[in-house]
Length: 208
Length: 82
Image 1: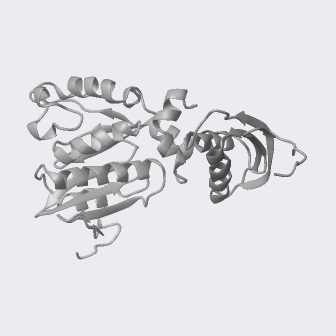
Image 2: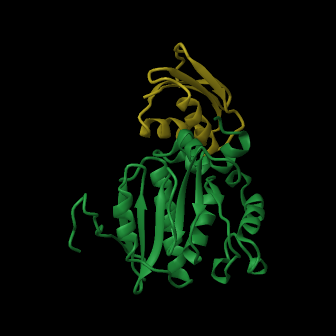
Image 3: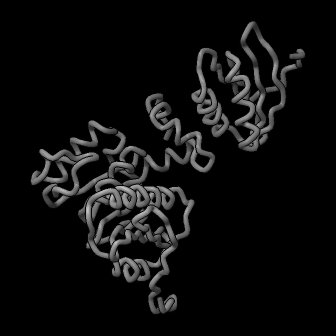
């Protein structure tokens, strides 16, 4: 795949990043993400991923009120998410539509995860946001156990931060720049800390 | 700027009229298409690109082999891919 002239201009700031470059951008353009949960943080992550050129898809339910503000408008609430998302992406970045070569999943919990691409779960525990990420070589059971401690949460500034962080985690996995499994806590004041993983029986318990 | 004998090149891009940061964006994409050790000739116009492109190339591990003034306000730059 070769970047078109429009893509060179659109993604010029990505291309300048030493860890990304043109080849990294091509990889992002070939990666898809299916939105599998519901919430403000997930909606923010979808906007950032679409802006980066990843193929974003969603289906199966109406747009929820907390999902408006970035890609989706207040008028879209109650309408089919798949169609509204498609219209919004066509307007925001047509590169975000189409057939990817690899698909992962991003969901604000509760959500299901499948696909050979990256998995990123977004959620909350008390007043902290949390994200759990898994690449191709990460343990799915450890991912699910760790993400299982998180639940759906509020809209607002914290959701915007968590969504942006989730999009970054997904892109780093797609680019092969990340550990295959991990988690992060996001405090109300924007501080980010590593999350202890809840390991499955095969990988040992952390006890925390 | 002293005259230099142009090194043998594997590819050339003409970026006259382009401004920063697109000059280095296009230089970087051209370097990505080359094998390590191959030489890219870049033709640039303007003071800022003449300063920024070699600096950015060095920072990313490429060798600035030579730079020469080709005409008024136009420079030729030879980069070996690192």
